[in-house]
Image 1 (cartoon, rainbow, N blue to C red):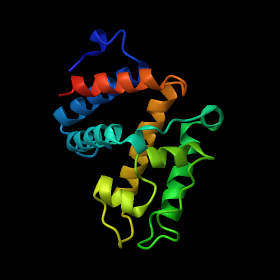
Image 2 (cartoon, rainbow, N blue to C red):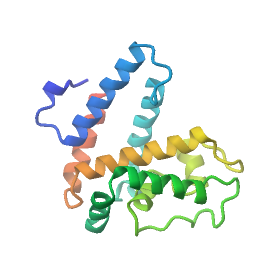
Image 3 (cartoon, rainbow, N blue to C red):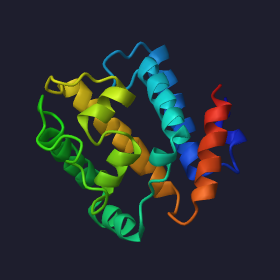
Amino acid sequence: MLGIHEAADASPFVIALIERDQRLKNCASAGDAGGEYHVQDMGRIDDLFRALARSRFRSRFRLGPAEYEYLGRKGSASILDHARQFVRQRLAPAQPRNDGRQTPMRGHPVFIAQHATATCCRSCLHKWHHIPTGKPLTARQIDHIIEVIECWLNAQRQMPSDDTADAKNSVRSYLQSRR
């Protein structure tokens, strides 16, 4: 795996992921079982993002200029509060209203992130995240969904929407370095 000093020419997204990996390893080696992240969860999220990158449908989502502006104006904390509200209202019930059609395709950074990360409906949550349908979401499942959305939004924040080829190459090179 690359160290920070070896990634001088890497994109900010790759550097952020490397730093996150180092924090996770430090928590795991210190026996911090109460931390927000666990090494096994990190592996699952990495596997998820690899699979999402192979999906033509999921990998085509990018924030547009209006969403970038909104994200910058509102800030991460506010956007993640919106994400948590959307997930609780639209996904958390055992039988969500209009399941499969409850998440708009545009209009808010979280909506785009939900489609990009397959957290848009219960069938996608089941297929991609192995979260069972027909049962209300648990607090841990909601936290997982928010973490995935947050990771995607942070990656998008580091990559301008008109630079999709560079974004794919940065993500691809980072994921290959983890093997």
